[in-house]
Image (cartoon, rainbow, N blue to C red; front, top):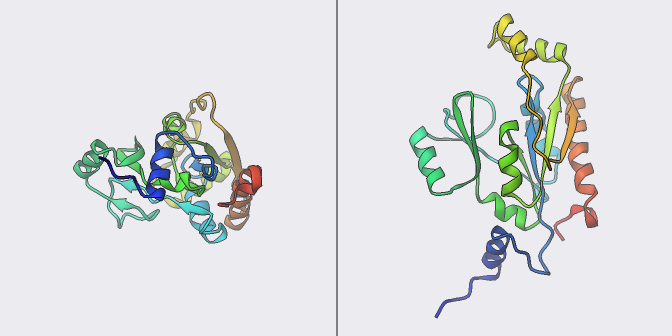
Length: 216
């Protein structure tokens, strides 16, 4: 004889299997924020947290194989062996490698999406294809900036020399996979202008959902 699952647990499990009950809220959207180095996506994400309703939106905390005091975003820092062990336990909804590091988004985000909450996650263009297969609905938010703006930001950061910056600016990127829904945010102006554009872009997508995309 098996025991019935509590209603909330059963509802989340049903979503993870790809099924929905008639009284369930529509799944939330995972906003996957991508952009080349220097376009300012980390700044936009950090400053937009206070402007997006905390009950309706969740900013994902990534697991990364770099020290917690290395600067940048708030992340869960782990050693490589711990990351690989977590991946083997299927602890990640999505994981990828970039710049010699491993990145992972926690599987618990599926439960948040299943309950109609929208998730904003710092992502990577190379992981978009896997993302589309992992969640009910994903929207890629591509942050862009002009070449001269990016050049000035990279020079001000001081991590790369002129030749490396020129090579980065000349780099060609592969097209997004078929079926990817992509919206773009231009970040050529001030950080304040960029944040307003970023928040408006996300809220515009949510506003097109039936009922305005609320949690119900």
